[in-house]
Length: 135
Image 1 (cartoon, one colour):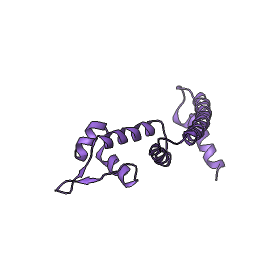
Image 2 (image 1 turned 120 degrees about the horizontal axis):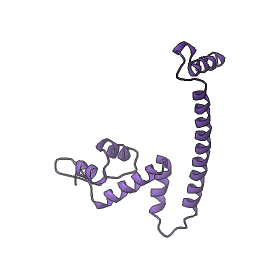
Image 3 (image 1 turned 90 degrees about the vertical axis):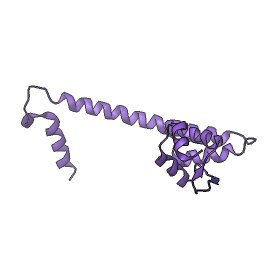
Image 4 (image 1 turned 180 degrees about the horizontal axis):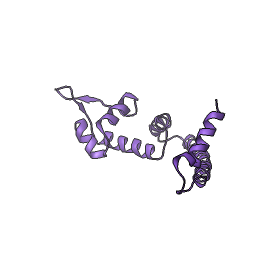
């Protein structure tokens, strides 16, 4: 199948498919007589695997490692487990940072009421004060 059909089958843009090829996550082995890239069902499966990994917010480097590990089906999965443990910790850290951000935004929002004018806006005053303090 050509790249357009692969894109439709996997709900992935042509540009993204080409990007994954450039990053050597997705391989094309065949070309048509007209020099079009040709893909098979293995490419569909691999692209869906990559998409699933991306949906889990795995980096391209992590996906590359997982694809390499997948080619050694008899090996132990301890490397995969360590990678997931590290990724889980990164997600936990981001969640904590996002919770702090939410609290900061809520605090900022409480600094202004709808009855104020722009000149009296507590949010803008706080943001302006913080901007001057960072110089």
